[in-house]
Image (cartoon, rainbow, N blue to C red; front, side, top):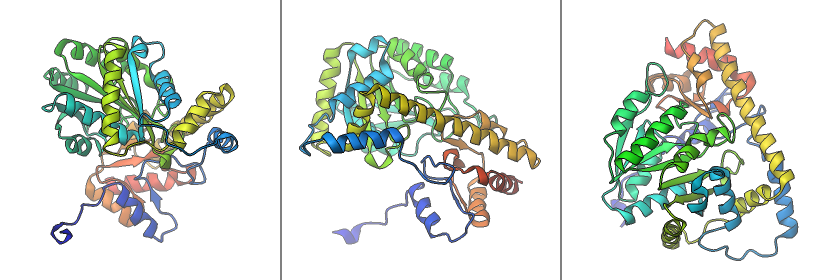
Length: 393
């Protein structure tokens, strides 16, 4: 049977880490995979997470199943974090999932059950896993214009003009903040405009918010989503704790459904739980238990928010430091990096130039030109600046 299989294509991001580990150069950099690293190059465990783990160790009495919906305290915490203060908060339901990718797949499967001929519109470019997940669920995928390759910012007019063509059988997938891969976010006015289009044309918004707290701040990063949730009947959300809690390997996420009533949201939750039963049955408990513990304790919550703010401020400093280093070395072609948000920026480099970065400088980046700013160390800025200028000439 297996002799008939063709070789699986390498993952464009994860395969970089393998090549990076095999590189013996001392000045090598892994700017491909999306993880936060501190000034020592480590991905740390947050102090609040350490405290929560110790509390769990001291108090947890069982490793029994948690149920199809996962940790319900965690589920409520995710809804509180994203929807408190909106009318959607009282008509939303959540299911814990194995990371945001699990949430994406469960929600895609839900869409297929509700309306098999659904088309999901995703930004061009978008997170590398968006299209494969939607197509694996049986949904059609269409791209809408998003990133201006000249200005390195969002082309709002082109985006809104195209989205005006979406209708009742369409779903529009939006990045809640810190757009992956570009780092260019839509404005609050854009959120308002897309909300108006959704109400006028009848398409369903689908918000993937995986980087809350890494842009303008925890509350500010949810402002566009909250406006939309407050002014629309139906909405679906995939959220992640990988970045803002540093729980990458714990695969902690949630699928949230906002309905026109709590009854309808709960009906959708029930269908997601049925889908989960036939896929992974139940999500892993540890990460969700940690988040629930932290967000149920005022002192731990404040410590977590402080740590998150410190990481975010360091990201801002890295962006400013890199653009300053590039300017100091005689180029202003990368000033846009300072204005992007979150972990990533698309540099505008070609695949050939990205190959030169890897071969000549030991700098590993995705072929679409994306670099992970959060993977940088302060002492590497001058070296990266020189490499970017050299390969872009």
